[in-house]
Image (tube, rainbow, N blue to C red; front, side, top):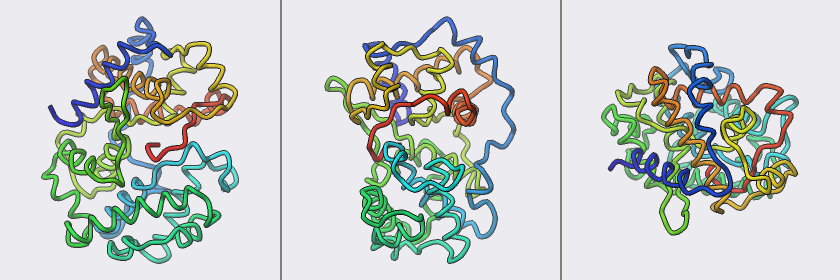
Length: 307
């Protein structure tokens, strides 16, 4: 079983055992069919992503951003740019740094300090998130410098055109770690490792023949969209906690169930609507989450490095 298949199998198990929420099975097919046909290119926001220039720079940006693409549990307290989300604030800071100075070489990234990151991102250098970002980027830099000759593009090339293979590789790295436990069973999600594969392809770094085998990139926005749209039904105690802004403990049963049920709901949608892949549904749902019906209601938050 590949790691991506393990994600599917584990999330299906959690969904079958879940006590804190359920999937509204009868709503899945009409909901899936309500989405428009996705565009041929599901690429990231060109204002944020580096989509032009040398392949090495595009690869460096995708991997650097996805190594720090977490922190939603801290978004309410970080300095946001006017009208921008926490993610967009961080991503734009990183993009501006790349535009002004280029990517950090891997051997420099291996020693990066929180203060340097905070200056680039416009944040407090003493904030816990800057320390976590620095730790993740150091791990990425050490790996690329020691095992990929300092080349970020070589990370993608080594996968031989397989996103599944690259997820296996990234999943072994601390900088992309994302595995929980549920009643004694290992539950991998690998949200950022899978997202990195999509971002590398959409940036034109490489072409994967099996991108459609990836699962939903399980964060806290897509489960929220599915909840608001009536696909995920929360237990009233969980609903009250989320609606009040209470932080969930990362790795707790409710938090694992939320992420796993979102993955499984999307898997079931791909079975009743096979013309859509999980990656395409992820893109459609994530963009839907920027609308006012979703932004006006609290979503679950947990302080972690997973999302």
